Amino acid sequence: MSTAYVYDPIYLEHNLPGHPENKERLVRTTGLLEKQGILERLVAVEATPVSLERLTSNHSQSYIDAVRQMAERGGGHLDLDTYMGPRSYQAALMAAGGLVNAVEAVLTGEVDSAFALVRPPGHHAVKARGMGFCIFNNVAVAARYAVEEKGLERVLIVDFDVHHGNGTQDAFYDESCVLYFSTHQYPHYPGTGHWQEIGRGEGEGYTANVPLPGGVGDKGFSLIFDEFLYPLAERYRPQLILVSAGYDAHWADPLAAMQLSITGYTHLALTLKTMADELCEGRLVFTLEGGYQLEVLAYAVLNTFHVLLGDEDIEDPLGPAPRPERDVGDLVEQLKGLHRLV
Image (spheres, helix red, strand yellow):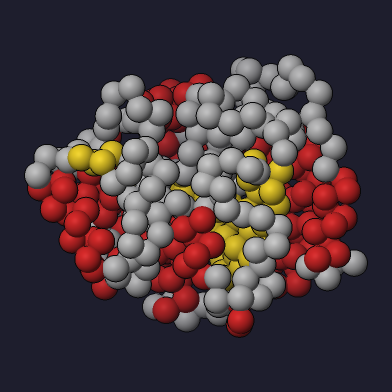
């Protein structure tokens, strides 16, 4: 089986030292992948700037212009959390374009699966505003590309970042061409993602939120994926699975209070790969979102590539969570009832 990766040095030029979302996230990750000999086993897919036509499928022209102008002035802040530097606009174009290229490589059969190692991340960015470290919504742009240009009718987006992907949810809330599934700590930034948010109009039932209290770990996430996500996906029959891969639900991450381990993340990746193999000819594309403990991020991405390549290796230098985790059995049963899976 063949797996691609997307990376470009420009992703390091969007940087603010001391900010959680800085270039060291990719420096550490790509360094480990190179050290472990993973990159030489992968197909390199080139990142190119996303076209304005594709970008405006998800973002307003006025917002795009404002981002470009801020970069031309030397940078600034889109909000308190989301910074811009002189090269941030170009890096954001290349992040969205890199993911589109990864999706194209999978849909054309060039490779079986892919992981876009891009930044800035994207799942919080809404139509006319960047927020939560995100400038353009990479995964929403790529999903829209798959639907509008490649003719797909059903795309599943699985978002396991610890923060709810409000921008991705907004992009497809009224449509059935994308099933958006999210696990996230709740209430937590950005405050969206209640279980009652299930879509609207034609999109009713095509948003599935799993709002979690702090302290949920490997057993809970495994139960959610096996007992709720999997039957939801079997009913939907996606033609492509996109994954907003945030590794900030790890027990050591500084920005949240969840209990996943690197081993637990690896199980999620394996479940998604099994799902893609069964439902959509293995068409599976990951894109990087959050994750702010650098060793966790690097090893979680490494293990995801092991899964995509069919390896059985699991490398987890931090080990299991040091505290007991919360049970989510009742929540899963309630969500299955809400979404008519029982």
